Length: 384
Image 1 (cartoon, helix red, strand yellow):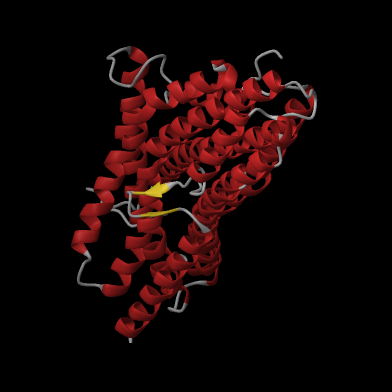
Image 2 (tube, one colour; image 1 turned 30 degrees about the horizontal axis):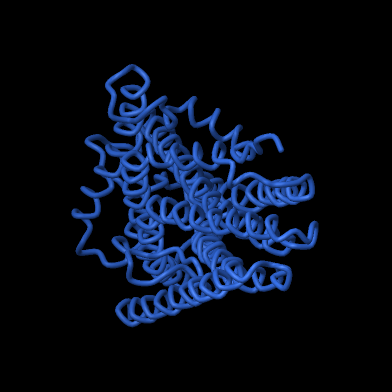
């Protein structure tokens, strides 16, 4: 079998990321024109914008409702900066992950049926990103950018996209138009970064799940194509090596994703609770539309991480059962003994950790929603 190109699904993403400076040749710590351009974009569009938001939040800290409205969106901006910083630090390991996956023969499909299965699932994954992940984010960003325009037409007041401090009167022309444009570009750039980082993180977890599928299929085929003991024994050894390398690959994946997952888990419950409480305050109808879309987007972002974490657990949990489906009756005694040891060692499924405290699962998602509801109830009591 020729090498299966695992990164084919994100070739377009990589091209776009290269265009904006997020995919250097080696790392982000070489001072060349490419990295300098990226750092300038990040500083001008993200760091300065977040700093202006922070200054204004300090100024309005005595106004509970106004501070509450600014906090949830500012929290997501901090989220972006933390994710981006972690992505910059872990970028060499990310490229190593893709290199290992594309070039190690143990991770390649063994027949055309497996290759078709991988292509089908990766194609479905690509459609999922386009029609769900990107579509929902586009709706949320469009709502955020457009609602001040509708509010301006409705009330006649000029409002910014995000509450920020500026050293000038931004409500006068042309300062308002320039400030509005700057915030629109800054938000779009921040959302683009989050989309790319989340896409890569979820794709790594998808690859781990697909490798579990390949390993299970290889186990099920052992001993049925040929009854020779040597073929069963050598095939079983190859599957053991595949599993050992899969564990190492999952550790590399966890090393890249565990901080991203922690940031999302830590901020999602707060963002959902704070934003949900704003819906029950007296805000404009256009703002309510944005808040509802924003809540759904945050919930969906958290859900997809938990879903793919659960998928890894579910698929890796099937590995010992698939190994038991091999034709071990015709295998030599040494292979039967090794099979018993392997079944014992694979009782614990592969998990995506969250700072080595817990792991991603649908139960984690439900706990995040319960925590968000607690924040919501607390904020409603305080607002009264």
